[in-house]
Structure formats: C-alpha cells, structure tokens
Length: 230
Image (cartoon, rainbow, N blue to C red):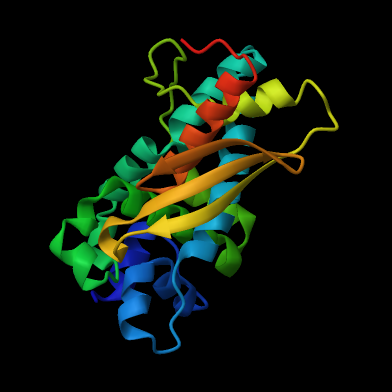
C-alpha cells in the first residue's frame, strides 16, 4: 500500500487517527482474503453517503436560491451519483491507494466506477469522523463546479429520488432498502436489493453494485405504483 501521508496531502486533511483513512481504503475483498482483524469500508461508505448528501444539499440551497425543489433535486442527483463520484475519485488518483483483494486487483478494480465511488464516500466519512463536518464540507466542496446549470447537467434518471418524492405525498409512509442476497466472487459480485414501503416489499432490483440494485428496485416499485416512466 502506498504511503498514506501522500494521500493526506491530496485530501488536504491531516488525520488525527490515520486508521480511519486506512479503513476507508479497504475493500471487503481484501478483508475476506486476509482476515486479520481488519475492517472494510462498507460502514464508512454508508455514513459518507449521508454526509455527502447534506453537504451538497446545503450548498445548492444556499447558492441557487431561485431554483425550485425539482431542479435542486436534479442537480444534487448529478453530484452524488456513482458516475460523478467515480470522476471525483479519479481526480485524486484514489485507486492507487486502495487495498483490494486479488480478484479486484486482477480485473481492473482500481479503475472500476463502483469501487472508486464507494471508496470516495468512505473517505468523506473518515474525514468527518476525524475532523468534523466542516472539514468534510471543505473536502466535498472542492469537487463541486462553481457554475451549475440544470439544463446542461447530464443526469441519469434517479429512480430512488423519484420514488422518495412519490411516496412523500403521504407523510406517514416510509421507505427502506435492504440487501437480501450477494452472489458471486468478491471481484464480480451481484447484489439483490428489496425496497420496502413500511413493511411491504414493493420492488426488487439486481445489480453489480448496491447503488445499481437500489435504482432497479426503485424503478420496479415506481412501475408497480403506476408512475409514468419516460
């Protein structure tokens, strides 16, 4: 593994607990092969996703005061999707520092969008836990373009956001995504995700990343609920 101090310089954050950064860079496949009390980055990824969302949402709310909710949602989706996070990770050559299992290493894992996007979110969480929200905010905002135009932003349709907005018409309804199955080797996993409305399964999705599977589950749920998909 490369010197983490070199990555600290790229992140522009000096860690009090460098172990947080190491965990953020540790893919589950590496842990499965080594199993020496190591932690993988999945829990940090979960937290980083939320930190990223609030930072981006607040930034858009404060800087694009004339945009309605729908356009703000589209802009946010364009900045937190896997495609965007993959590009952000490439900007700091994050793939060079990842701890990967042999399967991922031998099949281009250091450049794979899903792996890099997940690791980027985990890094956000590591900075948040180590230095607080303001440090995480400073890091995230480095990657946000200064001028965004909702008509020019390329946005893959965000089925999760559409489903959330559809369900929010009834304030008592709650959505929950659950990974119910993981298939295949670590370097080529397939995930099966269910989306629950309250306690009822309303959609199931399959994908090579959890995010992809969640989008497919949301798409199926929207069809079931009669939502017009373009």
